[in-house]
Length: 609
Image (cartoon, rainbow, N blue to C red; front, side):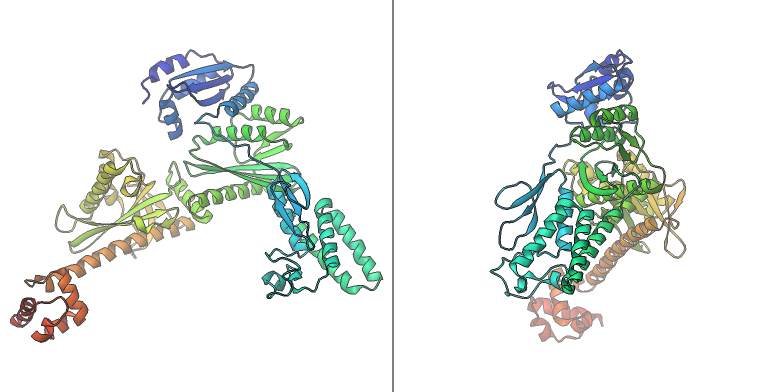
């Protein structure tokens, strides 16, 4: 804890109840955080009171505060604008920082006998360039659509040099390429197609369709039926592409949709930008250690639109924010006309927000080597269990024995919703003999977290704390393990997986009550997968130990026969029965055997008889 906490709180309590900006410094006089407040005293004093309600990020920031400054403003709006300006200038460590790296994009038409249409980051080299565009997403989509509509080649072949070399690619066979490589299209015919494609890019769908329809009718009147048919197919392709874009159209013609998805630690902002009811741009921002979501969202909005020229009349967001009025005033001033936040409750716009958040979840999942669907299940499980963050790293334990013999345990790990087999661990129960599953589980968790105490600085293997522990068992298992965690100050959510009388997963328990799973199919399937996997792993280790014991009680009980020699004998003869029936000379000639060892084995089996 910060040794200056009391001093900082006393100073904070003397601040005025007025709007303003506060600036936190560390001992090196570096600015580490900048925030705004409606009432400085109320906001700043919260940092230096109880730490229980703070996120881990805020606790770390507070621990590093040496002193703070503040600037009083006339309104919360002025505080918000000043905060954005100061954050941009100073780039404090604990604020969300967005890079203003949105460059321009161009569409390039290469200068060669058979031109290509491609994306370009800058207008260098020869050729024609259309642009600049602020949206690389728009440029990519426009090029992709144009290439498909006009069936232009995308391969790496050079023309006319490569005419007739090799067979046409798959795109030709699925009618997404004109097959220029066959050499049956003249330079003039191809360049006419390129001219039409460029006109399509410059003039847009409606103008291009009207022009194509005029050309088609003219070709039909001139009895050029083959050309008319090609133009008809092109018109159909243009309209089909346009219809695909309109799938995501909403009643509000111009808006941005912004959603945030977090796993309790990191987050992803997804921005969908709409114009004329169609998605024309999409941006993604991954934020490490996001802290308080509401504060982070407000910071993101101000920084994002401070770096953008175009502000839509409506910004649709996925949650209520505290400083709505100040943000609306900021957006309106930046846009030069009314612009405001909107939180949908139903209808098309709520569906857009949901789609936006799903995409944010998928991006965050991919950044952590997970999958969107798995991520959604983990979030659902976390919500069901009331966890503070998504359980990305889960450990599960099970005990296995046969009437108290070969008492063992297995630990399996699921990371990002998938088995992480490199982290699986086996335990042989050492502290007692006989059958006691509760004592066994107590021993296993004690040993596991004793290793954590030794390795916690490495954050690998046992040096990493799980986000959730699932025990194969109910209230008794929880009661056996909870004192271990409490005694070692290990703060990890602990639950048991309860089975029904047919040994199938039924519910999850925290020791005080049960949470039914069958009504939540995705969670039910996932927890069942974990329970089946840990049971399989523990049983497998138990069988391995039993096989080893049987092996030890036979060959390795013979004087002069160790584990290596016993394995060699089994490999050579195939079974204990064949070893027993072997002649002395056969034993002597077996790999790794000596005369004395062979004599000992022969006597062991024959004297026993």
